[in-house]
Image (cartoon, rainbow, N blue to C red):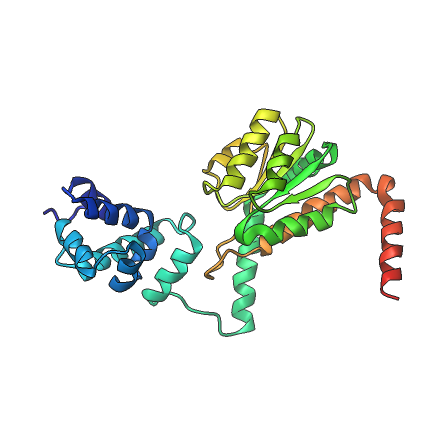
Length: 289
């Protein structure tokens, strides 16, 4: 068999048994993780024997599972080096740890440099005009929905916390369930949706894009990707650096973007909200006495 073929090409060209096809489907869907899993772990997850995976590996032209895994790891290393922005954060972290390419910060100065780098890359790709247009859309909206899921949920609640004293009718949707389903049906063309996007095919993200498209509601997308369905549909796209070399996405830049947009809103409508803000502040102060 041609040793230059990729793993995907080998799967495509192989004549597999039913069990082999089951293994292939799992491997293709989880290729970035299986590169670092043990034979026993994968067999247990698929509820098959170890030898079935070894046979599958040999059917693809590998000497065994170890050879297959090393080949996939090498492909993954090439992908990470060539497309650092497009690789899942957990995959990148796991791969870099395995390939001994990750240098964990040891000093405050190194941490400072890492976070400053994220902020600088975010600001370099998000124009002030985009921030202003996002602020204008939120001000003009009848209702505002802030949508996020998984590790970006905190970003949604942070933006809602900032927006709520400034504007009325601000809602956070962070899971696909009854509340989100009902809310999506209520969205109209006069509303605005803010989506902290992964660019993945999650139910909540798909529903958000569908609701914006069908209702004509305005859509603000905050993401580190500009090649996803959400990014292409956005009325305003704000880039937010999220990959900080950790095994999870960073919300530092999401928070910064929320603060910038909300600050622009507050300065623009300050004469109309200063009494409201003063009343809120007085009541908050009273709570602490």
